[in-house]
Image (cartoon, rainbow, N blue to C red; front, side, top):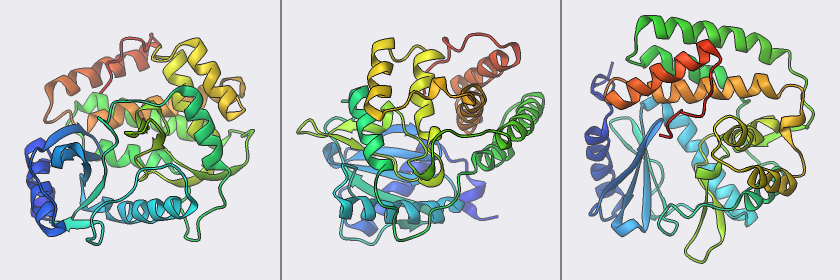
Length: 300
């Protein structure tokens, strides 16, 4: 086990890695502001002109290298997505942690409309596949990795592991309505932002894979019907922009449960260093057990 694996990956550790990576990339590390902590620690630097992503573990390196290749492919296609910055070869690696640097988009909080999201996703799925290979979508691999590392109660871990096993069996039986192809992998309103000129651009490119197109439609549907984060009109705009309403597909409830499990295990990664996250994990698990409303799940 390396030193970086032994050290808790919290905001302070991530910022230390970022500052060292900035030196290697010849970028100004002043004005560091953390945006979020998940599979990556995400920061704004250089007055918000640059966004940096610091990988939580060394095992993120292959996916981050693929993310760089995806960014280069989308740029060559003229697709409206976030662009890499700095002349340094990316990713920059510090103690095994992969670090990338991207153009900042306005203030990072000007979200695209749901219609723009649907249209952009349809356009993305319509691109010719890249010349390099993308991995098949394996949603339950992340669940296993996260639960193995998460600092949570043994009972909670056992419940989530059992739920993952049940859902994996149901997932294998799904019959998808749309053709398979390349996916963004984490397509939601938080990952489609307006730039300074007001043009929508897709960010967070590290989850690209191949698999059922329904996967990329799920989060917007869930954010509407499970969480109330989108209105009925906003969801209708998204479905019309894409040209398909995933909520009408027979496998929707199974895929929704898989997505909910991923939301819980994503947050569980921070339970050991963030008491609020630990409390939220237990609250979410209780609603999974009881079948209760997800409307009080707090955004993270």
